Length: 156
Image (cartoon, rainbow, N blue to C red; front, side, top):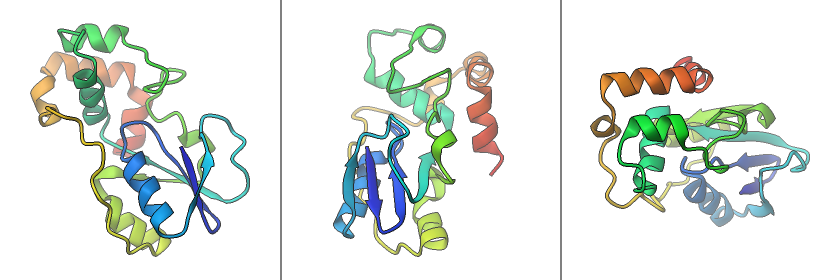
């Protein structure tokens, strides 16, 4: 989903606090301007949120219980909302900036002057800390498959 507040446009990746951020911006006077999956979203300073790729992958794994092991999931799962062109952070190419999920409220304040409290919405039921789901071999496999996303996340 895409939300515009003033000259700022938020483009939300699935499973990266997109609902919570969108609702926060709408409460502050923003408006939903449509889906963000097409580069039509207009003029403005666009930003998105990126999250630890292992945490994102663990969320998708928990939401798809038909996969019994992480290795098979990593090698075979390819839901359109999860990744496009082999990327978890497929909207970054359309954005002027991105914010790390780990420091979301602080970065919103520093970069945009937003002092709004972010409510947790849509927390994945039954999900444990992402470390629980990954063996060292699966971490290496995830890093290989999503190397561009890990590089982007880790450069900050």
